[in-house]
Length: 119
Image (cartoon, rainbow, N blue to C red; front, side):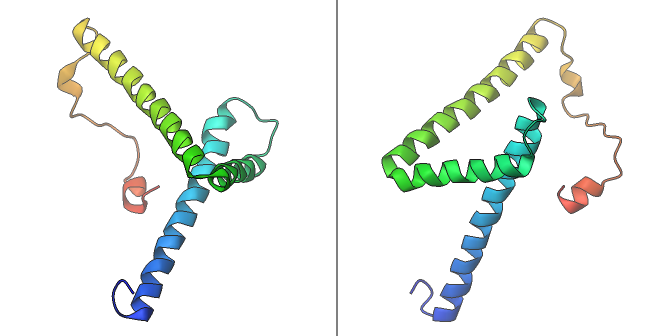
């Protein structure tokens, strides 16, 4: 109905669904492997990723109100983490330990592979 061409509408909806599924799985793997992996090696990352997806599904099945509350909490966690990073940077600059002239310098030892592939 959106584009008045049923096939085009199907293709766009299918791509949006695929995008949502791939981003959810990427978030689950990142949470289980990168973030939680720093604290424990006892539980396999795949199991943690599955449990993470099931927990998010349970919140969504419970209702929109709970989903909104969970989204607000996770947003506050993210904003507080960014605020801590900004505070540390501001302290370093204003105490004289930081070097603002290096803000535009990005030195990496890589070959540009990550930039080209998006890894």
